[in-house]
Image (cartoon, rainbow, N blue to C red; front, top):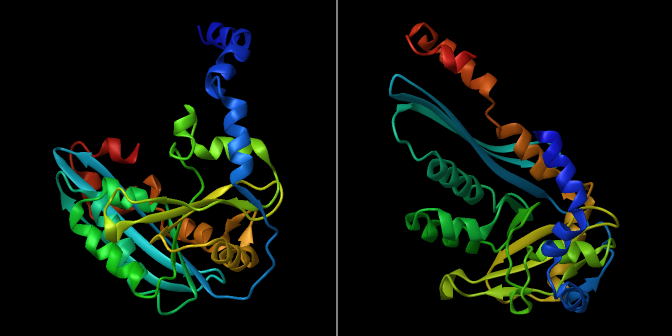
Length: 278
C-alpha cells in the first residue's frame, strides 16, 4: 500500500508543489527580496549563554513519574545554572514547570553574560504558557534587555498574509537567497503594550539554515540586528549558536534516563511498570 502512496506522490509532485507555492508565489518572492538585507557578519568577541529545558514522563497504574530540567550554559561549555525537579503525581503540567525553570535560569544569567539566548519562540511563551508566567517573562527580559529568543523553525505566516501566502514566512526567505543577511524587522503588538515582539529572519553565513530571532519591545533597528549577528557569528556552528546546541544536549531527559530513575526508585518491581522499561 505504501508503494502506491509513494507512486502517486511522485506522479502528482508538480501539482502538490504548485499548491504549496500558491498562485501569488512570484509576487511573494519579490516582496521577500525587498525585505531582505544582505549583510555578512564579522566576529565580535562577546560572552553568550544558551538556555533550554526538557521534560519527560511515564505512566503506570494511574500514577506518573516525571522529571524536568533547565540549563544555562556558555558557549565554552561552562554551566552557569542547572535546575531540575522530579516527582510522582498525576496530570502534572510539565510544560509550565519547564517554562518557569527556563525563565528562572534566564533571570540568574542575564547579569553574567553579554547575550542570553533562549531556545524557542517568545510568541510561544505568550500564546501557550499560562498567563501567570507572562509578568515573570517580561520582568526578566527587561532587566538588562540582552535576551534573544532563537528558533530553528517557524510556522508564522504574518509577513505575506496579505498576498495570500500558504507557507510560513521562512519558506519564502529560503527561496530568495542562500546568502548571509536578515529580513527587515517585523513588529507585532497583539499581546499588549508591554508585550510587543520584534522579529527578524537571519542567515549568519552563506548556505546555512535561516534562524528566527525574537526580541521583546518594538524599538529595534537594522544596526542593532547587524551588531547582534556579529556577536552570534563568532560562536556559531553551521549558522546556529553553539551555546544553544550545548544547552539542548545538556538538559535532554531521554527515555533511557527515565528508566534509570524508575529502577533507582524501586518502581521497576511494581506491577504495570514493564512498559516503562520496554
